[in-house]
Image (cartoon, rainbow, N blue to C red):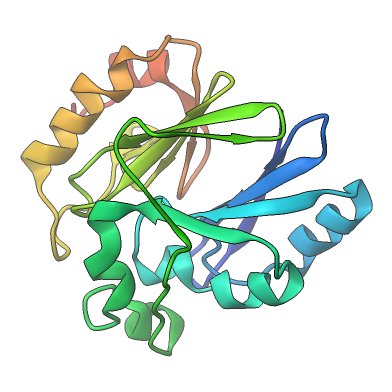
Length: 205
């Protein structure tokens, strides 16, 4: 699988484009629109089948509508426990972050441990509450898209609506730290890391 990172949204969100040899692909956490991402899709001849949201905060959903204009056949997917945040702009901080209220109605609500195949790539969705009630991580092919659950030597904030430090610590220790040490962590902000590095160096967990 090939993965490319694009910085979007006013607060520097990592938006990912991923696809395999079939040229079937997906976008993770479009915090804002990226012309560079769209150009990469066209250049590589990728068929965007899904836009996947790790959680419902405005900085991770602000670009959904614009990308759907570019890729109208794409389906939007999120965890079912995140319905409330995705549908309520007063809770998802989109006005403060994006300067406008943003809501998203996913085409597909997945559940904990559900899988989805895109091309030859199988994704597994893991519920990792703590940053939000319905936050999730996406596991595939030696990678985990960790959203705002796990960062390099840090974790997502827990002072927003639905946040909980005990929950996010439990999500990381009991779910993400079960992955192989060489699993590459692709977070929602900052640089990539590995599960092994975080086990040894993350001061929060």
